[in-house]
Amino acid sequence: MMNIQPIHNSADLDRAFVRLEELWAAEDGTSEADELEVLSILIEKYEDEHDPSGPSDPIEAIKFRMEQQGLTQRDLEPFIGSSGRVSEVLNRKRKLSLRMIKRLHEGLNIPYESLMSEAEA
Image 1 (spheres, one colour):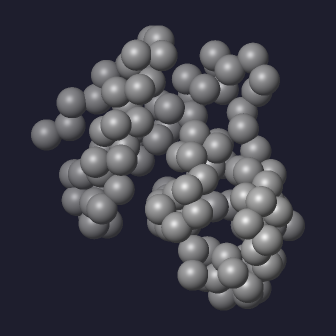
Image 2 (cartoon, rainbow, N blue to C red):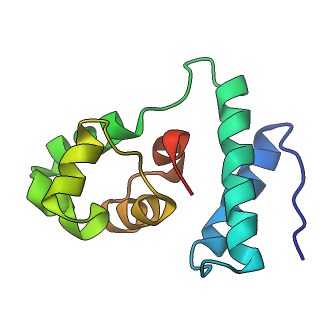
């Protein structure tokens, strides 16, 4: 059973991110996957409304990490998919999926907050 609550402040946001991490392994079609989707929407909405710098840019976050670690587009394939898909994401022709976000977070330590602003479920 979902226990989703509105996000009113940074403490609520922190709790939401903790729960988000707990749900990342949820299988499609489960109530946990539904909760993950709703929670990600709530987080994005809160951040859009409360972050004065505006929503983060996931593509810039990925490019920054690539530059920091000397990575090429080919190095992103395990996290995003085929070379064509990597190119589409980096050229903003394809949005990040929740699965891509999870892999980028786990594999390259890019914060969820930096990757969430344009996710598709």
